[in-house]
Length: 413
Ligand code: GCU
Image (cartoon, rainbow, N blue to C red; front, side, top):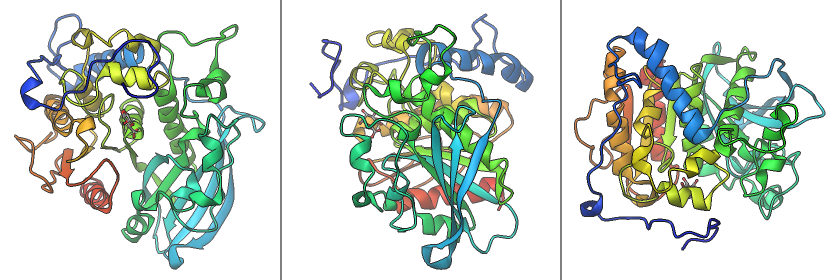
């Protein structure tokens, strides 16, 4: 049993044998709860899409707080030359609850110095604090407003963490291509540990008299996704950024988060999931790699309480993860897998992307061009994009090269 099991039950073991996957039937994304089949784009938009969103709200990621009425932010560092002069660095404090005494997140931005007009942006949360994404000594070391969790924030907020995640961010590659890179520390929104809720933004949005989470309330993934939308709120005010061309992306648990953010917030023009696996791009009904029971047992603070009810009845879920991808339609969505990341079920990630195709086609796009799962290093850049590369669970330069090609193709610049 993995460490961190809390429910006193033995989660179904992960399977790594294709012959044991067994048969499963995916819910039809175009079949409405009332039994009617979606025939038109208007029916998808007006009826089925909101219905699927509600299902994910109720049974999995929870209902998030709405967009706050006020947006308070302050640009703390401006026009600091970085990356050997190729980029300008900007740090922005964004207050999350409409008051400057309350919680804030710090957005770090790299902008190409030679930009003519507003630039498209790649935005994602990071694991190690903003100072981890680049060795640039000018970046403020994360000091979150939260109390450190068990070994989590405290260990990260030191100079030793500088540049530790640099290979995952490729700031130079991104800015050289004429795009901005934006990131914030995910712990600014919800500290990623079992007692993180109390120090997260969530209690700030409790209804009068509420003291605990309701079964369909949001949890860590919902909170991180909400933080991504707040970063986008800021981008709409920054004239150097093209807020109509923001790609939201994330790796692993933050890849799940990017999909959920992009599914809900249609202002994101491209959505990219890297090695997001269970609870992200991968099909839950496909019995391979991590299972719902495993993820809910190891990480009970990620999804809402109702989702725990599906630990042993995945077949009764009213959706599967292809319907999360379908919520992004018709906007471009990219799913990236890694060969050695079997825990995340690369084939299940591909099949899920493929199963969103009927919705993308109904909405007039080319959907997923590949008929079968492509071979290693044979990226597909149709409106639903996909690649699998060699190597481990990580974000690499190869992944970024594909994200940039995909962005350029679909943004037309
Ligand atoms: C664990 C977890 C995955 C998650 C990953 C990560 O492996 O089981 O679901 O994607 O952590 O976020 O790195």
